[in-house]
Image (tube, rainbow, N blue to C red; front, side, top):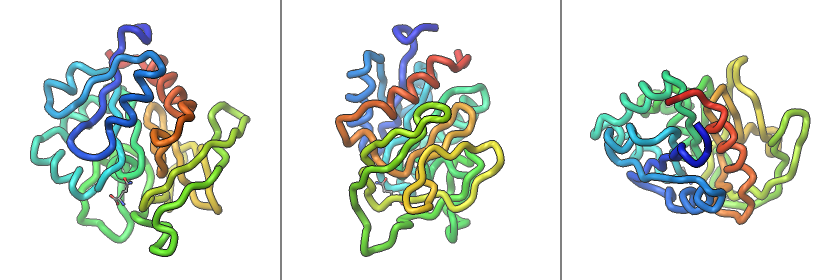
Length: 201
Ligand code: GLN
C-alpha cells in the first residue's frame, strides 16, 4: 500500500491527539480518530498520545479497545506512543505493578520520572533518526516518563542525561517527550516511514 492509501489512527479518548493529527496531515497522510473497535478496524497504524496514563488505561479497558489494539499489534500494526502513550506501551510500570498497560514493548518505564523540580522542561536532545546518525531534536517534556529497563530487541533512539527517552522495537515507537508540540515534523516522518514499510493490512 502507498502512503495515499494508508490511514494513521489517533487514539482519541483523552489527551493531545489533535496535535499529532495536524502533523501527520501536514506530511500528507490521511488520519482518523479512534474511539471504538470499528474505528480501529479502519486504520493502518495507531498513535497513543500524551495525557494521563491511568485514565487512558481505564478508558481502554472499559471500551475493550485494549484487547483489540493488542490483536492488531500482533498482526504487525505500527504503534507510536508519546509520554502517557509510552507508558501504555510498556510491559511494566515501575513501582506501580497494579497499573494496567498494553504490554507491547519490552521496556519498564517510570512515571513522572524527572521529579517535581523539573516536572516540565524543554531541551535539545540527540535523536537517532537514521542508522548511525544522530540529529538534534527539540524535546518538550511534560511530567514525562523515562525507560528504566529494556530488552535486547529494543533500540535506543534518544538519551537525555543518560536516561532513555526514545525507543523502538520492531514496528513500535515510544517517546517520552512531545514532538507533536514543536514545528519539527521529523520524528513523525520517521514513524510514517515505519508505517509505509509495515505489512499490516
Ligand atoms: N505524567 C503522565 C502520566 O504518567 C504523562 C504525562 C504526559 O503524557 N504528558 O500518565
